Image: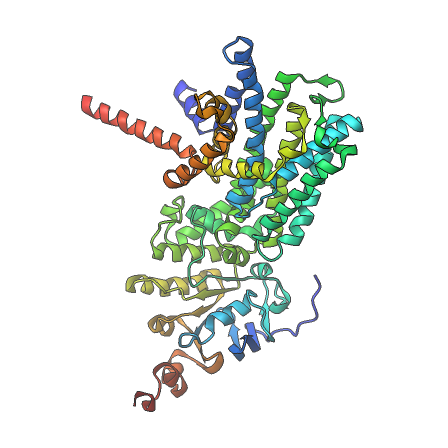
Length: 273
Length: 341
């Protein structure tokens, strides 16, 4: 598929969203939203419930086709690509991978197999090689299995690799989903509420894991999160939105002190009356 | 190498269950020869193997990929008629006829899939049901090819143009083909393609995010299922040596569905168990029961009851009975050993 020429991103920028809008019926879920993410940055997207955070994620990853706007991304091949010109299953190949708010794993498969699904695009052999279990296919499987075990070691659940996913506690499931994103050597990982359902200790561990992923895998991370302690602790830059509209952007400290953000989250004094 | 390590090695061999099953099944003609079993058993078990192959295709589609087809019978009939026409009327060699009789249904399945699988998997059920009914009407009406309601005859296969198979040899061919297909499917579902099919069933969102093209893999699953259905249809016409239009109805499609529910969804050996229960038990057991055996369609009633009981007590299929029995046996052994120690 050939694509129209895309304006290259400025150096150091990995994702640039400009004037992104999507409406469902009359409701504008995301309204003229723009922001940029730098390479190796941990970027938080926050906002009250229903602010349009997950919708923005779904637009970036092409689960939804936005009505308007451009989403430029620096692909694995160091080319600027316009994500809206790609199909949803092509996104991961460009170096952009995501997790889901309500963990999306395959219950019947083992933890290792679930992580290997994250390497799907790395398999070069096809159907017939798989059926006949040719040497080429076995080699490939072996190599990717080793890589998957390394990733599982990294998130700390290598000992559970062969356990089925169904019936595992939520904390483990979240780790499996995270491990799955690491298989494709991503440039940008999108985490949709990574701390939801975790206890305090697990959340503390998560902050470390997110930072280690950034350092070890050399990628940027975009996360949506309601746990403000985690967001303030781990993010370099935060963008706050409300009713699909841009509200404020800055360092955790700037966001904390921002009047608009305070109003959006807590309401004004008049609201109390 | 000691005996023990050799045994352990054989036990760990992944294809052991399929090859053992094949070996056991290939003994049946010998048992018939020595009058231990009646000769009708060869036909009966041969048919069970043919239905196992179809049901393996459906299991790949429904069990692993989560797509529903209600047109199994129609496609199987199409392949059967095609192979009969190619070998009897056109006098084509058996091997060429096999290739054509698989290629035609698969090509049609890809067309049906391209139209119906774009939006959602569920539309496949409706489309295949419709196509299957069209096939059935065609079998009855196009009598210059299908011989209409009087049915069409075929011969046992002739391999490489000179090696004429008889009933027993064709039966053995069935055993070999079934075991090979079981091994191929075993490899497939344990590969990345199998994981992609599983992902498609388990979570379409996750599958797409991980780079799995849903339309492509839905088509792959459907085309593979129809390829296996065609193989079964071809084997049927050259083993039973006769086809008629009324056989390929919705009832047969639903029976194949019953096979995988009773035997075991996503279980290769379970598929054989299911095919045995649905297609052999009526003749072997039910018809021998006094009074009840004479009720028309008694097998359907028993099948229905079996499905309900299996779903209630063995949702992963009757194959679990064997696993449970082994666990119970091991427990029993451990208990008695514990007592003596």
